[in-house]
Length: 221
Image 1 (cartoon, rainbow, N blue to C red):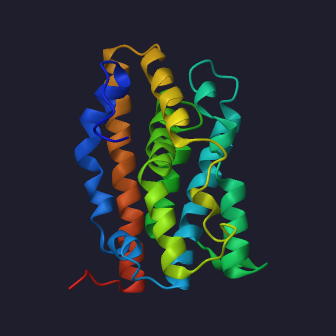
Image 2: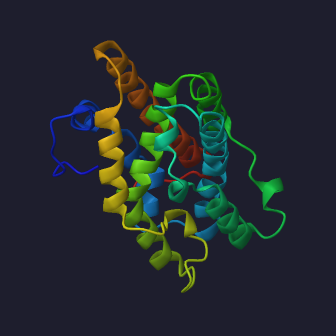
């Protein structure tokens, strides 16, 4: 969420408390190269493959907590990314894509944490869901446009369906903030959620840092 999106509830508190954690990922060599158009198709596909494991688990957790009165409402059907990622992977890798996306060490650590906290702790699920999907609705929109332009990925969003949503991002973000503000968490639970969001940012940064090392992505000169 952008700094211009002001408020006084938990959504604003969460944004303010974790704003500094965004930069850990945004400043990575891999993400800088992606946004600057310095990556090739295979290097971009590597990210899509790692993200698939994360979203697959998050959406399994969304199914498991669908009936939870707190976590369930956050799992907007339109936000789900697994099918879009599958389509992108089929476009980028071909029909054997599932054999080509083994999780790296950082992704495995990320997924281990999702299994640990997202299936039976509503606040943990929301923390990780917030970190991923609100990022997709915000900076992810710019990244998607840059990738499509740099790689010439087609006119029908082929390869970048992950970044495309059926509705306006602002509408989803407004609804999400309302749910955060309405969540029945006391001060201690809010602090736990904030801490988990910060951990989620670190795990995400670890994923892209690992990709940068594996692919030997160099910072811009």
